[in-house]
Image (cartoon, rainbow, N blue to C red):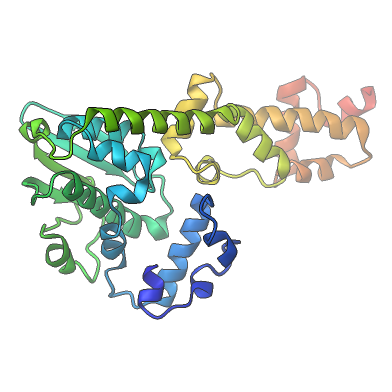
Length: 319
């Protein structure tokens, strides 16, 4: 752990994360996204801000770090095959940025979208994810990849001079978007550890892992179950995505496949709970509004009238 390298105790690194030292010793323990965010915040708070923590964290990630996902990439036939596989299953990795590939005739862009990341962690996560990709590239093809440009759409950190020193690449900051740009012809490069049998084995394992995660229930049902736990504190969709350990766009895409939006799920839950609370309890309309997360009773009344065509008070009188 990077924190220990700089003299921090494990306890201080995981403070307030609801992670125990025993958890970390369990081989199948998975750290949730929001817990990882808290660990990173602890590191940034406790350590010297001039330290290139994001670079060091990214360089620690290798194909072997990511299990089946990494081994499938490593055993791909070409850079193109490796990249396409990595994109298909990147949610199985620790990358938090939303990745997108734009392939043109001459250039290919690998874009790191941080728009849905917490503002206070965006710099760290974009830098770490970008360096992680560079580290993985070196594992699959051990050369200094001839990129055209590496851009980050954020201000340069105080340790900006460490990027070329530690990675061999200059970084351009304050750019329109965060991306790695390289010649498309490089995608045809063969990989030295290509093995179709190993690749097929680990691709199947990734598919099984993805299927197991998906089989835990539809995304709309997962969201409903979480929302029902604390209806007075409806989280934003980006907070829900972090709780589910998926990228925001991934959550939106799955909900779209299920033909529902996050707003509709919240609306449906509030409607059903409002009816139940008004029918079966003696809570006042104001108290029901608070239970459902409304800051003003007037907003609740307008919503209820949209649902049922009458006010909450008239609905209660009819029960």
